[in-house]
Amino acid sequence: MVWTLDRLSFARSVDAAQRDDVSSNGSQVSSTVTDPRAGAVLAARGLSKHYGPFRAVHGVDLDVREHDIHVFIGPNGAGKSTVLNLLGGQILPTEGEVYFDGRALGRTRPSWRARAGIGRSFQLTSIIPGFTCLENVLLAVQARRGLFGLLRLHSRAVDVARADELLELVGLHGAASVPAELLAHGQQRQLEIATALAARPRVLLLDEPSSGMSAHERAGLGDLLRRIVTSATVVMAEHDVHLVRDVATRVTAFSEGQKIAEGTAAEVFDAAEVRRVFLRGRRDA
Ligand SMILES: Nc1ncnc2c1ncn2[C@@H]1O[C@H](COP(=O)(O)OP(=O)(O)OP(=O)(O)O)[C@@H](O)[C@H]1O
Ligand SMILES: [Mg+2]
Image (tube, rainbow, N blue to C red; front, side, top):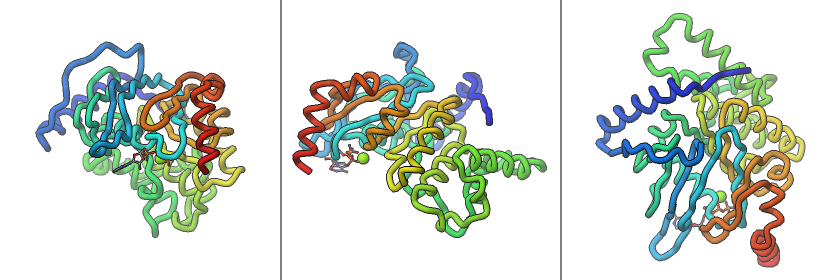
């Protein structure tokens, strides 16, 4: 299964999304194209999220390289999900900025970012009970087409083929006609990834995709993530150290809202500060 995300179509989607953003809610997107952040597809500078005096995330700089599986690690409450939400626009920063392809995202909404190419998978919310797996993915594929695309006569057959392709990619081809709510929890996570991929994201944000998965499903998840990064970039939070060591091409470690280490999995798990934080976490548990 192959698709291409060429720069021209991305530029068009950004322009269209910007027009839509300004006309629909008047919010502003900075037109400043910053330095390309050394080729980073997604970047952050000085990113902070404070709740009153509490610093959930503070002063985070980040560079996500295209086609990486970039994994956030850290103990509970370290700020991993908050950073993912800041990147996806689900929450807005107290300070700092997120850049997509060198362009400041400002206060753009998640729907705007999704159209521009930043996809997000949520725990279970994207699955519609009462619909089969195929129907769930088909709805997501059709949502991407929009009304104009749906009017094209051949589009349903094309969409079904695309939905089939996505189910195959995530390893759920045999479950196409199964109602989504009957899937095991781990399989629902796989379905969720298929629906997120329907939008052909350039970057896919995943929050603990292995949660609720069996050991067997986790092994399959590693292969799935490697298939996804042939056409997209993955940024994910993950607790499973074996999975992180297996798939991550880059790792950022967080503790108490701040970045404490970054590099390959081996480098990060070897860093003195990371070992200290993880050992402390185990003693607290
Ligand atoms: N809306 C909020 N109001 C106040 N504090 C919040 C809010 N959202 C998150 N926090 C706090 O911010 C900190 C970081 O939370 P976050 O969910 O990002 O951690 P995490 O690294 O994803 O943890 P986990 O591994 O348990 O998922 C936590 O102390 C959390 O309680
Ligand atoms: Mg979390």
